[in-house]
Length: 319
Ligand code: ES4
Ligand code: ZN
Image 1 (spheres, protein in one colour):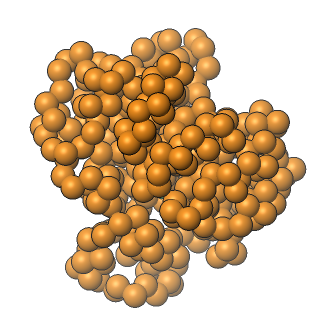
Image 2 (cartoon, protein in one colour):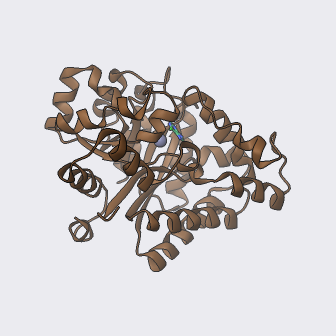
């Protein structure tokens, strides 16, 4: 992939490759339910979002120290450079680490240091986005957000992720109000497994600047028209959608239809170590199965940069 692209939908914890999981488990004295690479790899057949999240959260037990977070962030950036990524907006789940007794300073310190190093070594610029779990109480998100700000941890925005069904964005209205009032960018996963109504809530109640996934918007004509007229970015993750069975096969993926409808879509990799590949693999798979024109390829790449939170003039330099 030659065009410059921005990776706007990637969970740091989702870049943890099986080999790294076993190596860190050994190094940190952590016992996992699957001791060999073969047994671990056997777990990667998902039936829906929750079946993936169960594995994803279990594997996080191997991340213990600031050095671990530094190492996996730098490993990701090295891989990202190879796939043409010029700017990354990295998600991480503070609750996944706090609940295991790992402090915010260890997590964010390790990540930030690697992001700075990655910028020097690979020229990849970055933003860091703390995602809150929608399956946890909004009060937990609010408490952590207050702490992040009070202790001066460097984050650029907040997001909302984890199990979607049954946890409407409306629950997190106060958290997002607080984040926006404190100058943070705001995004939310919506319309991955959840209904179009969740996308509407994310727009109206959380006032998000981007929707992560959003593919179920196509079930609501009025919503599609609104998203088009507002040029609302939708960060679509094709391989993720196939592996979590939100679409049957890549050939059935609505990405092309979304482009044709004039939606502001871009391609991203979500949890590349779990879903079969990084940004380049997502582009290649879409190209192979849906057949992109040169103009569509250029539009997808440009949308990713325009939808980023990069400030000018850095943004224009990449377009
Ligand atoms: C996620 Cl694919 C996906 N959806 C929702 N939350 C997530 N956290 C990590 N990957
Ligand atoms: Zn995601």
